[in-house]
Image 1 (tube, rainbow, N blue to C red):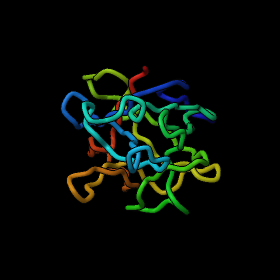
Image 2 (tube, one colour):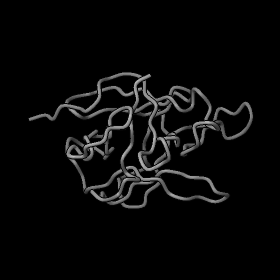
Image 3 (spheres, rainbow, N blue to C red):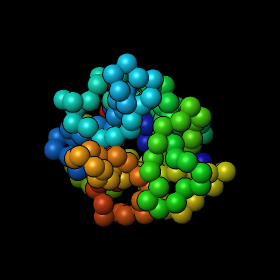
Length: 162
């Protein structure tokens, strides 16, 4: 039995639910000026590049999807096998993720769909790991795989169709 995805295939902004007015976007930016290398992070909407904050969600089956950045044309990924605290990176190879509605019992609804993004590997869900912001050096915010927590709003992302 496949589960229906909380969003359809399309172009989205992906923002943290726990940021004020969903103002922190999952985004990429060039590593250096005119660079073809890109860095993944979480940035304020005002500092994120317009294209770097847009993501193509392509449903594969049910709630399984790939997520590709509009600027870098690279996919959300991680190196090797998924494990707790592993950094989420960008890759030219698609990686499959499960999109699950978060907190369906909540009475409020921000713009867009509230979603937990968990990994999918070899046709099975692995341990409960989800995308979660992490602090990096120089006040930068990255993304890593963290243990799923139903009480952590930092793991809930708002997908707003563009």
